Length: 328
View 1 (cartoon, rainbow, N blue to C red):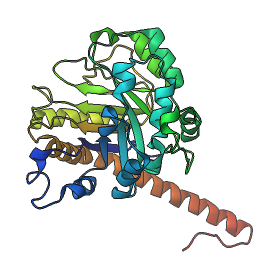
View 2: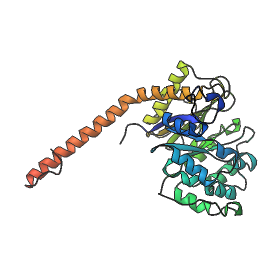
View 3: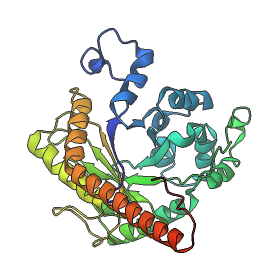
View 4: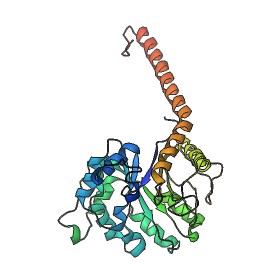
């Protein structure tokens, strides 16, 4: 077993005019910006899905442009979270899935559900929605088949492999500072987004097997960058989560979670002043340095276990007059 979960640090969206010639090399065409971004990060948030229904070909294009092992986080439609406000969500959820979500295949990462600031915690409504969410690709395809006639000619519900689906809730209202909310997320194995902002609640309760962070700006929402001290602080938090623990400064209301290694997703959304990609790359470097000793111990442990296992098999084979299957 690895000593730490997988950490993916990236950016929220990738189509920003001020980045051209600054983060993106001069002369890079807009069509190739996604390809370039996927060479710099291991994950990106797709934002277009929040604003409107996409087509299967769009999901296929995103997947084709990303390398093997890359993951996209997908921002769920605001139609469900902001307009319907989770009411009567079964058909809109089916439409979202059928629009091509599963066409991302192995590059489909967590699904982000972002609630508006004026959305208050309602335990009954939240739980009813949590019950609808699929937790694997087969379940998602089954739900997607209940789409309405708008997707009749272009629904995509093929499942290339059975995979786990992950969901994360981003809250923006103080009423969610309730243990009942944390209990619901743990019951349905949905992550609570740790959102770093100057306006909305920042909680670090661990509610499932992964952590999802969105860094919107340390001082000014969507605009300010993160200085060295702040990036060191976030690097320490990410490393603690990946190793199975919790940061010493964790802000939580639901008590400590069971210790287990966790995958960690971090996305910078402080894009207005072109800081997001550079802050993301710097944080990734610092986390990698912190986790390097952990990775080394993990490799050493596996090598030691392999040698021990090999020695045992060799002794056993000699005792039975046969040759070990391990290469010398």
